[in-house]
Length: 63
Image (tube, rainbow, N blue to C red; front, top):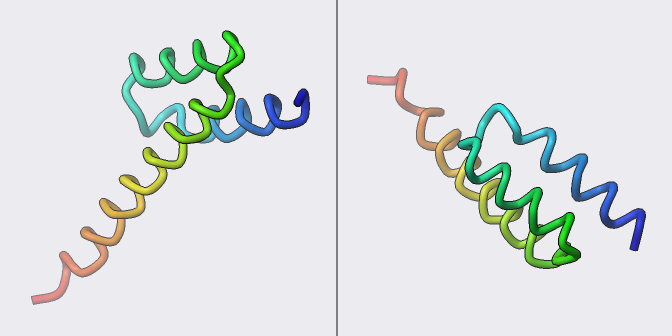
């Protein structure tokens, strides 16, 4: 379980500048309280949303 916690913290830190501070603190609190599975779900959802935004901007320069 320790490896899973460390990996989850690493993933969360990689998203730190891209997500609101409140969201970061909430997911960090989940990890520290032992709800690593819930934190992983939240991180997955955030990554999915960021990918959608990136894909949306991909074609914005073409006219």
